[in-house]
Amino acid sequence: MSRPNGLVVSIDGTAGTGKSSVGRAVAEKIGYGFLSTGGLYRALAYKVFANKVDPTDTQAVLQTAQAISFTFERQPDATLKMFVDGEFLGGKLHLDEVAQTASKVSTNAAARAVLTEKMREVGKDGGIIMEGRDIGTIVFPDAEVKIYLDATAQERANRRVRQLLSKGFEADYAQILASIQERDLRDSTRAASPLKPAEDAIKIDTSSMTMPQVVHAVLKEINKYAS
Ligand code: DC
Image (cartoon, rainbow, N blue to C red; front, side, top):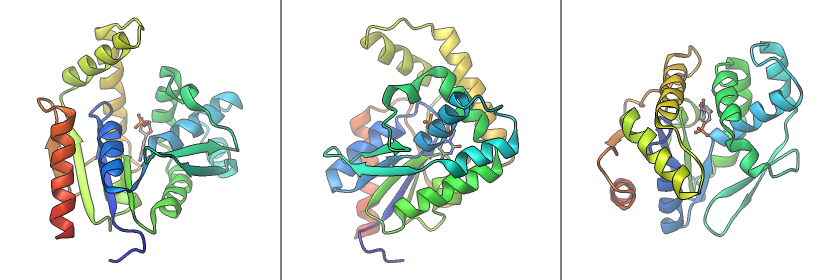
């Protein structure tokens, strides 16, 4: 399939495998846009929370999703900066409560269909790296290059601890590990678009790899397709 602006590259995988850092770095190197699609689920979670909607109320969550207006602005580092009803929510989307609610509302099949359409709209012309859970399986089953990143839950918890400590926050390894395992379980066992590699995805276990090594491996796959 040929798209006007280049390829669609999907990067799926569990939380904390470095999908965002890797996706952004690769996009910057090849001049593509980069979208972290978890942001749309986090935005929905934020609105559900702000509007005091019950995350298990299927109809109300769907209506909340339908009412959100998303706009995106490409940044110099390739990232597509997301505005939710005209507002940049930034760090508010990264609170643990928002992440947990995002994982809950993302079990809602009808709301997923609404957000999936928004993602397709952003990516359909190509020239984009999209990171998420179901990009290669559901959002863009016709993505030209599909990557699936994984790492052990212990290694991902260690990375998160190091990240928090480096920012001067406190970090409780046991609590972080439990939160990662809880999210993994919900994301991979939900009925609607469970997290799983596409059959034609290239699987990379990043447990003992550095970020530059993973970036290199992904670039290699893109170059293979392009040549
Ligand atoms: O990648 P993230 O941590 O920002 O994702 C937040 C939640 O959104 C995560 O629990 C799973 C869900 N998600 C999803 O179901 N499908 C996507 N394409 C991206 C994220």
